[in-house]
Picture: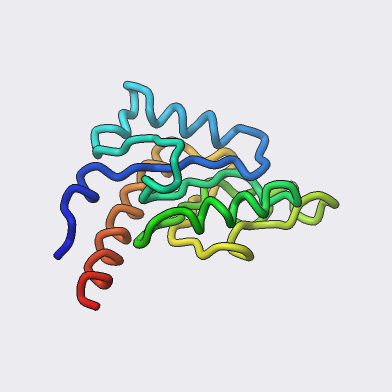
Length: 145
């Protein structure tokens, strides 16, 4: 049976894999009173072991790759990964640079891609809401097993 508390109060882990901070600023805007992402019950946490949604910004750099995979593996199942911004999805303007390994889907599975440089707060909120739907579906599938 789907645990309704997870849908009503999902915890988000935000990780910057090496971005310019443009998308990070937009994520902070989502948490402000103007956009109020918390009205969906979302809580921004720093603990991967208590997180349901992994919100990642920036391209994967050589230094961030291991930490990205480690954080993903520490999160309990079911979990949803949301790639915020062009850099996270494909490497963006940093693609092909000596210290960048492009988008995050080379290392962890991504459920929601949010394009943009920087992604707008509206798109980020839509992506998180889509992630909540995917989380509910994944939970139902795991409950059926």
